[in-house]
Structures are given as structure tokens and as C-alpha cells.
Image 1 (cartoon, helix red, strand yellow):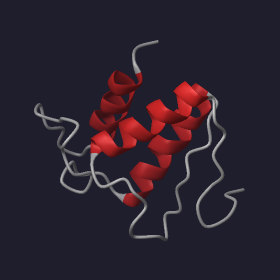
Image 2 (cartoon, one colour):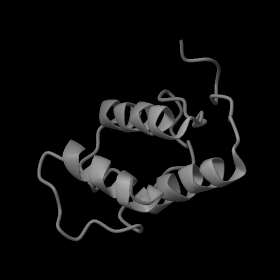
Image 3 (tube, one colour):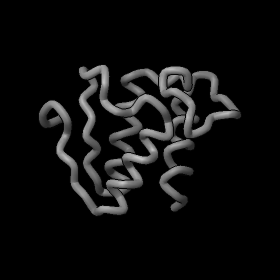
Image 4 (cartoon, one colour):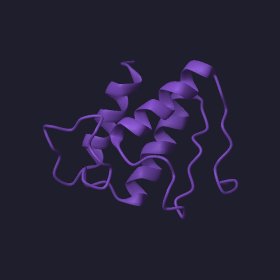
Length: 93
């Protein structure tokens, strides 16, 4: 398994309708062509892969993940800390 950054970038590229070869940490998620449904799918995949719980509520506009790097940093912190974060805005299932 690669680094968290490599994994997130791969998942984002796979979800993009027209993947950008210049996808970087500072790329805004919306500009990467990721829909909210894509983001939820990416988050579920990351949660399963790393055994974490990402605090994300799809119905909240400001979820702290404006860029690809924000998502990478959040997942890296959760993995490093071995944290099981509660979902923002309530449980997801």
C-alpha cells in the first residue's frame, strides 16, 4: 500500500470525469471535477482502507475539505493518531 497522499490522489484521479495530470495538494476539490457523491465514495474507501472514521457530512458546505491537500492532511492525521473520528453532523449508517 502506498502513502496516504498517493492513495488519495489515485482515488481522486479515478473519480474525475476528465482527470488532470496536474492534480496537486492545492487543487480545489470542486475544480478537480469531484462531485459530492464522488467525495462520499472516496471517503468511504479511505475509511475502509485505513480503519478510520472521517468527519464529513455531505449536507454541510464547509466541511474543512476545500482542497485535495485538506483531505490528504485530514486522513494522514487520523491514520497517524489512530483516531476514530465521529462523523460531523451525525452518524452515517
